[in-house]
Length: 272
Image 1 (tube, rainbow, N blue to C red):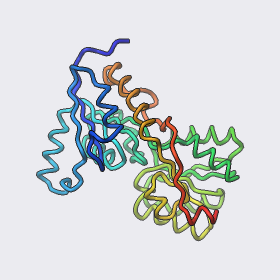
Image 2: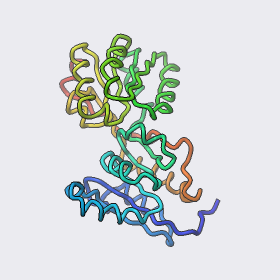
Image 3: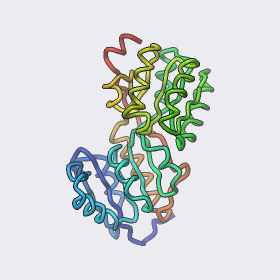
Image 4: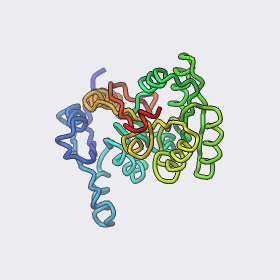
């Protein structure tokens, strides 16, 4: 079907680098048509705590018909501030599960469960505990079906709030060989993550994280997507979204389809 001729204004919000040097942001910009207006922004972390500068940045973003944050920090900020503007995130390691219930939110996670399950099988682990928050159920069901087909027992550990973290983790540890964090700052950051690592050490159970941040703080490994492969997938999805008149594809939340690489904690790698 031909792409509609109606012009679309959209913003691409990159983090940590100049957008023009970001292969994902550049690839997404190149999807635009001559009549579209594309704005590239770098997430101004230093200014976000200043109320006036923060509001000025949000005002500029509010002109967009769709916003495309690239990376976890950009996704967290945009999804918390722009609740009624369509958001298509790219390469977020662990958005809040609660955001997935919004019809305005869709995107590509920086995770590839198929490749992670392959490594789990290579290690010989048979009982996998998934730690997740409400909203991640479609991804959990996908992992469970794939894992079960490979002879693994996938045990679910859904955590809705901080009060449930300790009891849910204790129940999982009694049934599994490892814990796999699927995302959400409730579990992948702060006190929730610290408790997961504490229990991992005391019970001698490895943890799979969502990003290098967790590996540096006690997770055994994470998977990172190839930026160029992720850029191709995201650009193809954005082209479909424009073709469909800004309608998101189904399912709205998808794992990465690109190849990537595993990053292991060097000391824990020798231990496990």
